[in-house]
Length: 483
Image (cartoon, rainbow, N blue to C red; front, side, top):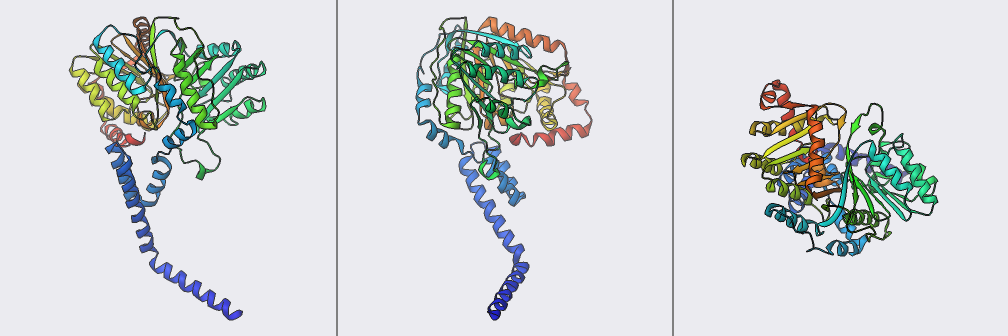
């Protein structure tokens, strides 16, 4: 027995000596094998050549860490699982009415509407009433709608703070649940952690059904860290909707406010698109199928509207193509308000071509961003557009989280999507496109009020920046595929 133990110890010791002598070669071989495997996977599955090049460079320059990051952040596992859970029922609903729509007056708008319809497989609905609401009045309107609900309340959001903004809405949801209203709350798995303890504890204690999108306490069971549900939707009684860019956080209602934002109250058939989006996400998350049939009136206003559902699944790239088509349809003016402007080369080229066609391009971004690296990258992109003749403006605090785009005083887009790689390729987003002159006038009036308080950034201002800042901004912009 003792001889056996001695022999085993000797073998272990010789093995450790061998490993000590050859571990660099073993580590190098494993690192190269991982880099080759990731490179082959990237080459086959990444449609964006820049993203493919960035991931390939990362796994070769930082072998083990790069491969681990690609496994966690770069692999899209969503599409197949989503289709398994929904069983195709949601897709059939989305295809319904594909060729329907309301004729538009100008050829360019007709082409744009037809293109977005083919992308989304949703009809352009007429008879809608869309009301723009700035924070904090949005929260009051949402609480009032929940208190008046009689049949159902479906709420999806990225951040739902357990704070002065979130608790009153949570209490309204609890009151609705106690009245017998079917309440369903869907929070993003990461966004729910912005407030500790999370609001989910408060809601679940009162019996309100709450789910977290792509969430797990175990890191090895959370392979979707970079694919977040960034949508902000609320549908009441399958007839009234709210959507836009506003999270539920105390910064919107504090005195003074630290964040400003925009939401829309939606009435009419377009609410069906909000409802379909929520129903699909809810079915994906917990396998419960909801009644996704619109129950409201069909003729409540003059706005023609459609939901644009985007994400890294079957809806991949629909938002970028929609925005690019809207830029191409512009004849006079493009106005953009966004908190994060790192759009990628194709959208930058589209804006540049619009300027060369004589289209006025106005871009409003925050003077002080809450994400420093994104701000630096944004300044590098804006520098080139300012040189081409775009009108760049920096809005003074509070931080403006508004996401709004208007074209020629006819077309309006608002929602949850930003102008960065995360929103354009990685996150699940929901935007509303609207065709209506009065609504566009309201949106442009809101932009005018913001511009009156903003600081212009001309080409000369960018050229006057210290050299080190220009270099810093350029280096930050090199990370655009990851931002």
